[in-house]
Image 1: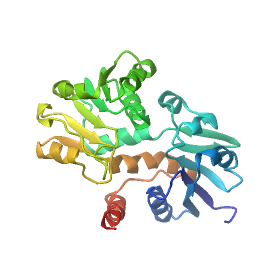
Image 2: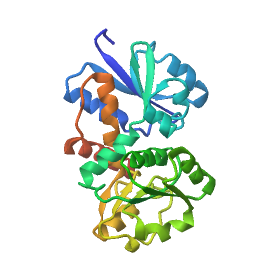
Image 3: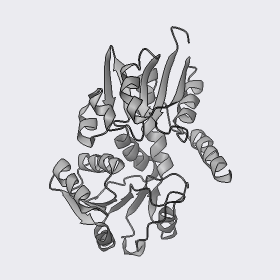
Image 4: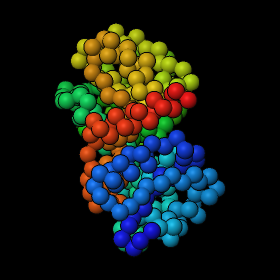
Length: 282
């Protein structure tokens, strides 16, 4: 690699499923940048050494995916967003200092902005399914947006209760089986669990209880249309899918590493959709 070229990567275990190389290399080519984006499969026991030697490996930064997002905080200088969420998915260098942020937050918001115009107008109450790392990013985004009441439903109530400790009294932790009873007051329903993903079972909720103005978002993108989103669209509700969030969360990292702010276009989405369908056919 020449002195003027730049490289970034996604670090995960495993990493082969990641579509990040497809997205970032598309933008690299589109903008005529001398650079490359790669996959790095790094097991948990080797993650610290890999990150501490990121620059010597020729990288200007990296994405971090499962299971490393929380470990990345301790090895970097996280911004307020990453600290609040408790996980980092983007690393970059400012001089010799390795910084971290969480672009899942803006990926969630920008996807809704693009898919459901004025989605947050009059948004007083949201129902978030799940209490993992993705849920933390979503809840943080909603708190920052000024949503007054956020119900967090999870099979393990204690994990949902941690959200109130982290994000404040506007969080209402509830048991999973209580979620259906809250649909009538939810202006926004967000699935952050793996339910709906191929082979993971589906979410069974009576969406007819939702108001006609409600928005339904799902972070799952395999399949492209989950049964939750299909049911919501059948009812005429506005929706935002997981692929849109994946694409929008990649924008800021690319800007940090390569100095250009890229756009999420229909052409890029079609490229990633085709790749996802290719996997389904295998």
